[in-house]
Length: 488
Image 1 (cartoon, rainbow, N blue to C red):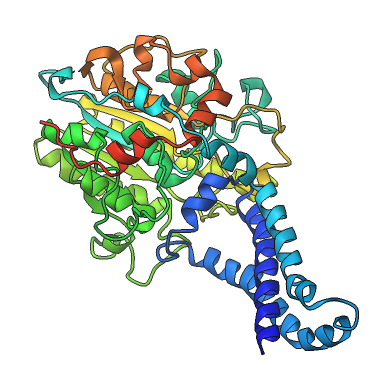
Image 2 (image 1 turned 180 degrees about the horizontal axis):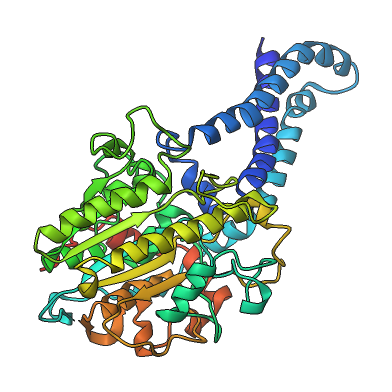
């Protein structure tokens, strides 16, 4: 019986590692070790049910079949091989496929390079982290509202070659037009954006990078996703600063806000009102039984945002609404009835639809009475992981995340040919609100309007990523486990 259980367990593990390797690439395309380590600890509750079913049928089911086959064959193979092999070697044989599958998995997703970097220690975060004091942040006499829109997986790369993009044609013409009319911080002299760095490459980490100017690094044994769990309690965030300044704040998502700890982050840092999949039915946005993949489609999300913006504007206090779209999430995106059929690839049509819906929503916002006192920031939360993009984009192309500032209190300056990361968008957003920030620094970011060198411009991508991957005792003790995030 020991032989049967032992062999079945070993083959189950080997088959699961192999099937998961191919499933991750086929489903998410571009995925790296830091994201896998984070998501492996996040409960499936709140995720797209289709992804859960896909994992069960394409990973767990083959692994279970392999285990059953191993359990059936183990006694027979043991009797045959016992004639030629000693007992100790027989015991180690089932471990060989496990070891081979593990090496394949770890090599495929960069775990070995990640592990080497993580084994080191870095003082970069300790040396550069800036936590402004209350007196370092001065708001204008009349505070501007903030509308912060995370567009799921949106890149500045999604234009055609004529605009410096990576795709056969421009699938985001409205965003391109808006970027030309507003302010777009770019790594070129044309449309561009923020570079991806370690521990910022998935939605929860991207939101943390933008609104705390920090990577999301969860130490082993710790968690941020359980209800009420602390989320970087020692850090100061955009939400903390705006709450202290008297802003009413709302987080709006078309999915479950609790997933990956996002609700914890925004309720612990700024006392945000949370609107998501669970509140949408009660607020008349969708039918109680309605669900599309992660939650509800962007068409309903924008209607929800209009309703919430009216409520916030009527309250009389300055407001901050952060919202996150979801239709462009991998795999394949959600092809809704509004989506055009202009491109042979499904995902490009989903991107084109997201482009149109965002532009229509912004036209509505700019027609409201509060528009003249509102700064709008539109960003991609991280680079797209969509597998169907892989054959369309040159592997040497430098992909960046989209950004757009409308209604900025500052004119465009120092916004082209910059190397920057999502960390820099936090102090830049405050500057766009007309806030004066002593030293032009916040978290690991700098105010891009001020022309201060960023961490990426100072260290370069390789050194910066290596330092962000290495252990930071300061991050763990002062930011992740710290207790004082008060700001008044």
